[in-house]
Length: 290
Image (cartoon, rainbow, N blue to C red):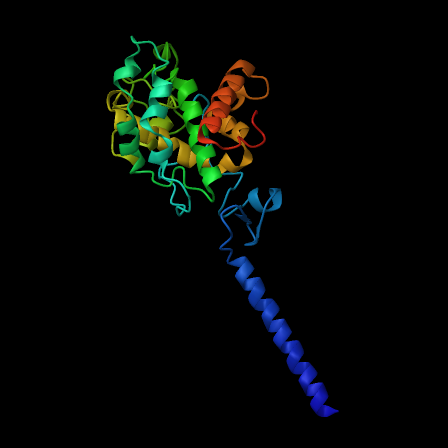
C-alpha cells in the first residue's frame, strides 16, 4: 500500500513538472510565423495575442506611417524576420512584368528613364526578406500588393515626385529627432511617394543618405528610391500583409482613402492587385478593401 502511494505521488510530481516545462516553453514563444507572441508570452491569433503588448509575429500594433498622414512611431531599421519564402522575387518580377507596367506610362514621363527592374533588384539586396513569407502563394501576393501600390502611386512608374507636392507642408515639428530643414521639402517621392520629415529622416538613417538635408536623393537615385519604398514596406506594411490587401491600403494611406475617404483610389489599387495576382497565378485572397 505504501509503495503504491509512493508511485502515485511520483507520477503526480512528474506530470506537474511537465506542465511547468510546457508553460515555460509557451512563455518563451518561438511561435510559427503566422502566429503572434502575446504580452504574456503565448502563441495565437486575434486581439489577445496580436494586440496590445504583442512581442513578435504579425502584431496589430506595429508602427504604421501612412505616406500622407503623420505616424506616431517612425521605424529606422529594416525587417529582420528570417526568410522562409518559396519563390525567387526576380523570377516573379520579370523584365516582361516590369515592362508591362512602365510601358503604360506616357513616353514623356520622367519615370520612364528613371525606374528600372535592375534598380529594383539592386535595392532588393538590402531587403531580401521582401516576398519571402511562409508559402509561394503568400510570397506572390506580397509582390503583387507592393507593385499594385507602386503602380497606383506613380501612375505606372510615370511620376518620380508628387504632383504639386511643393504646395504641401509635410513638416511635422513635433518629431524633434527629425528636424525639418527650412530649405528642403518633404513631399512625395519614389515608388511609394514617401512624405513627411520623420519618414525621410528615418529612411535616410536606414539607407545611408541624409534624408532631412537631401530628400531629393529619393528622386535622383533610382536604387535609393526603391530602397526607400522597400524600407517603408517592410517596416510599415509587411506587418499587416497577412490581414489582406485592404490592410496594406490602410497602412499606406490610412483615412485619406479608407472608410470612404477616396473609394476610387481604393478600387484602383485593388484592380491592379487583382490583375497582378492573376498574372502570377495566385488567388488575391480576402479582405481586399479598407
